[in-house]
Length: 471
Ligand code: DHB
Image 1 (cartoon, helix red, strand yellow):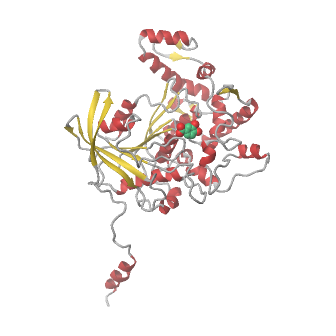
Image 2: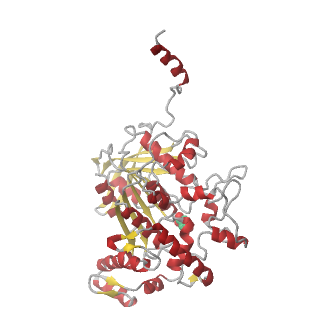
């Protein structure tokens, strides 16, 4: 018997059965809808194909969350659109690290600006759901805690790339976006593309065997770098004595603030524009000159003369030379006023924050995830974090992947946060942007003047940016 024939026998016996691909996109499974979208150029009527609640993993845990919707424009104001090779906007709606379902949606989301504007620009819009921290099964097990949400979004990316050529849009031009916790997850998608650390989680869900690298990432006010967020928060907002109406414990604040210097030094990041090494001592100067003054300048320049005069009269701490605003960090902090969160902001002693819950495990709803809070809360100076937390924190933080120069990271970034957003430290965006800039990536980072948590004040610019970088 020739050796070659033996190869076909046993090999075919062990090959996977050639059944239907459970993750094949069905191009016919859509309804045709219309949306009216207010753009820079007036209101547009967009006709689009809506593909609803498609499971993006073969072995889902919860189909309320592990599905995605696809919206494909076919005409704008009656003019045909061909989205076959268009950019794909992957827009998650996660907030507060809570579960996020898009399964019941009857069309594209109209309640945030990016999805409808992207559709009207001729892009494909994909809206994935994801598990979140509060989900508990009948046994009391928390099945949406870290890293479930980022694993789900990666599985959604893999689904899209697995369907290259079947699904409308260019799967090599996936642009992820999201706000706050959704911005943090967006940063993770961008920074950790194709990281092997998520592989066991993806495999357990039957995620498609495809790349989860994305082309570009657009996080808005990402609530990320969580294990360093308490120290960063006190560095940034610690001088503001009130959280809501109550005074903040200044000695705890000072203790945390002291830790920030060491952490910031460990990042070894250089500021934009030849600023040099970013430290706890110069970061206020850096934020003022690189982000805050340009932000105020753009804001003031865009105001009508009498509005600008009124704003400057109400804010005499701002020096306006006719083109540029300048001011001191301390005055900026006074202007922002009461901080949003108490001390510690993220790893609370009473385990009451969203992040304590995010780092729950099994039937434990919430855990400490910093040694400092764990030790303060327990009164045990030698208490140690649960052993699994090192991995979980790593899976939820984009900074280590950037420090490792992950070659499969997104190379184009659009990063935004409001200057009055005290949900986390402004250094979170500063450091994310600096890490990417230091790697030579294409970064458009900007802070919206007087913007609060979650704002998106230049959506048309973002849509143009997507078109430019995806060309
Ligand atoms: C969000 C806000 C927070 O202050 C936080 O700690 C986590 C998430 C959010 O809006 O998604």
